[in-house]
Image (cartoon, rainbow, N blue to C red; front, side, top):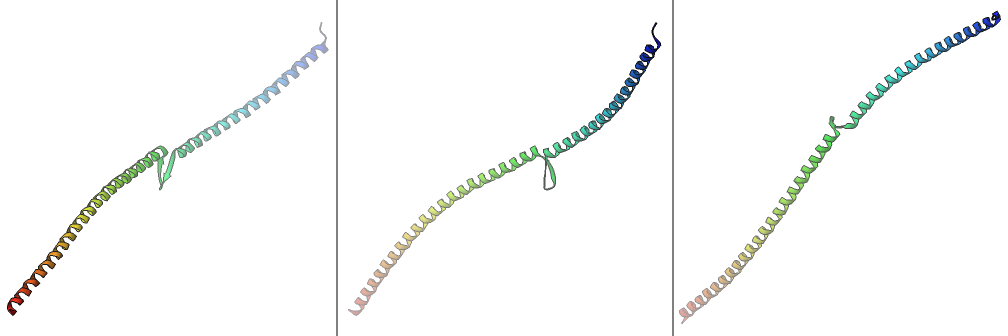
Length: 149
């Protein structure tokens, strides 16, 4: 013997709870749909960000020189190779320069020796010419003395 009023109140309370639960379920369903849309949107944004990151990594790893794209590590190796080659050329030029300077010094010393030898020869030749001209003059003077006597 339950009173009707208690049963109606219970039934009303159950119906209110069911309606409240249904409205909460609908609200949670809409929240879930909104969150799924948000997750999909964030997923698309993440994919786009990863693509931009990959593009930026590509641009960070490459360098443009005179309109040509090079990988930075290849460009570093190329630059170091060119610098090493130029240093080798400079070293070769320094070595050949020193060899040429040494050859020039030897040529200069040989020229100086030859010049001194030629100067001695010229000096001796001039002395000999003076001696011969004196002897010739003495001979002429003797000849003239013999003719006058």
